[in-house]
Image (cartoon, rainbow, N blue to C red):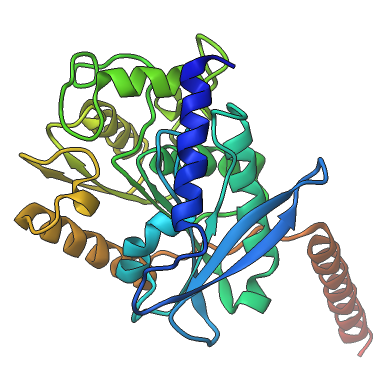
Length: 323
C-alpha cells in the first residue's frame, strides 16, 4: 500500500467516526441491517423511510466518493428528496471502498444489497415490481454498472435508474482531460480511477461508459453541470441509452460544478436541480413498473398449472364429443 492510499484510508476512517450512525434527515428515520457476504464478513446497510406501510417503491441508493470514500449517512439530502412524503423505502449499502478492495468489491456489495432488498420485499413493505436504483457520482457509476449487471444476469428486474452525474469513464474525455473545476477535477479523477480499476481496459461493469449494448436497460434520469469532468461521458451515455430505445431525461445546468445539487448551498441551480430530481422521481413512481422474473419454483408451479388446464380442456373436449 502506497502512502497516498494509506492516507486516503485514514481520512475515510476519520470521516466514518464523525458521521457514522448520525442520520441528519429531518423527515425520515434510518435503521441498520447487516447481511452476510460469501466470505463470512457482513455488509452494513441503512434502511430509510418516513413511516411504515405497504406498497412502497424500493429505492437502492448508492453514495458517491470516487469509489474510494463516503458513507450512506452522507445521503440524507436524497432521503429528504425521495423518501420524505412518499411511499418509499430506501436501502443504502455501505459498500467496500477502493482503498482497501478495488473493483469488483463495491459492485458485488451493491448487488448483494439489491438481491437482499428484492428477496425481502414483502417484509420491507416494498412492491416487487417497482425496484429503483440511484446514486450520485461514483454511486451513479455503480448505478449504471448494477443495471447492466442485473440485465445480463436476468434474475432481478430494475424499473428505473437515477445515476446523478455518474463517474463512468476511466478514459479522458473532452471535459475530464484538463478540468480544474471545484470539488472534482482531472487530478482527483485520475487518482480515483487508478485505485478502483484493476485492468487497463476494464470491463463495462467497472467503467460503464465502455458498454456497447444498451438495449433493455431501465428508463433513466440524471442531472449534470456543464463545468464538471463527467459532463461529456454522461451526455454520451444518455445518448447511447436513447439510441437503444431506452426512455431518458437528462437535465443540464450551466455554471454548476460537481455535486452542485448537494454542495452549491443557496444557489438557484441547486434548488432547480433538487426540484427536477424530486419531480422525476415522483413521475417514475407513477409510471415505471417491471415485475420480477419468475423463480424456479414459480416457473414449475406455472408449468404444472398450465399442464393441468390443458388436460382439463382436453377432457372437456372429449366429453363434449361423446354427448
